[in-house]
Structures are given as C-alpha cells and as structure tokens.
Length: 200
DNA sequence: CAGTCGATGTACT
DNA sequence: GTACATCGACTGG
Image (cartoon, rainbow, N blue to C red; front, side, top):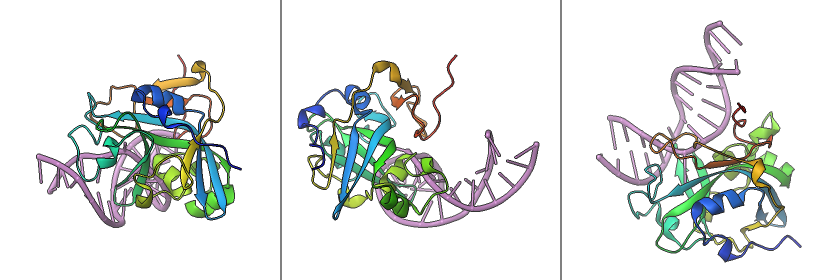
C-alpha cells in the first residue's frame, strides 16, 4: 500500500510556511498499475499579495482560477509554448496562492520517468526543473485542479527535515518582485535545478 | 564551463 | 505586438 496523503489542513496555512514544509515531502503519482514517487527538494512560493510575479497578482482569470481554490489541489499551467509547471495550492478559497514544485529526487518508478523524459544523459535532468518534474510525472492540463487526496496524485509526509538543511533564495526566471526570497531548497541535495549558492 | 537562441501556445497591453 | 514561474541545442573559451 502506498503512503497515506497529507491532510487537507497541511495546505490551509500561510503559503511561506507550507512552502518550507513541503521540502522532504513525497509526491506520488499513479499511472495505471504503477506508481511514481519523488522527494521534494526545491520549491517557490507565489502569492496574490505583494508579489507582482504571481499569476494571481492581478486577480482571478480563467487561467489562474485554480490558484484561488481551497488549498490542497494542484494548479498546472502551460508556458513558453511547450512546458507545464505544477503548483501546490495553499490557503483558503478566495486567496490566490500556490507553491511551484521546482525539483524532485526520484525515488520510485525511475524507468517510467526516463521514458517520459526521453532518456536524458544525466540523472539530474530527469526532475531538476519545474517543467521536467511535470514531464517525468506525466502531469499536464488534465491534472489542473486535481485534489491531492489521491488516487491520481497526492503528497505523503516523507521524513522530517531540519531547518538547518533549508536555504531561502531569490526565485528563478522571474523579473518583477525578484527580491523576495521565496525559493526554498534542501541545500545539500544533488537534485536541485541548479546548485545551492556558495557559502561565504 | 558560460552565454545565446529558437521552439511554440497563451495571456495580456 | 510582447512577455512568459523553460528547456535543449549550440556556440566559444
């Protein structure tokens, strides 16, 4: 039996708290009779308030509708004409907020992930990057709005992460509100979309 | 290594 | 038109 989903209450907290707390959790995806799993090692928070880079900053629209749903579902959007990105929706109905999954450590179903990704040369190219995570886990428009209580896709507790393992940095690939340190990484993970900044 | 650039759909000015 | 929460192929050092 696969691990049980995190409770809905996990998602109904301030988005930055959820973002940090997502590190070390596991993402599970059922594909027919097989199950894929990965450990979350890199995320970015987005919020309707004070965050011009957020899709929710300018209010509800058909695209960002799911960001305003009650926390505990998946917001999937299409970008750059060919890629999908997946987000964990947070907070109450009516608040536009979500956490982008940027990198995972593959744990289960690696052969299937390799097929879905076109057999990349380096292991980190399997799930290092938000669009790569979606491709490796077969996530696309069809999963937009999916509830995270399974059986299609869900999160499980995984194992605890100490605060000292977490680093907050600026987000990747955005212009506005770039000063917000809302990217959270497991600093020692080899599975990040890019290496942790050097210590000083 | 770093930097550049094309692919290609959708949202928004 | 222009930008876009990206990726992969290619260039040059």
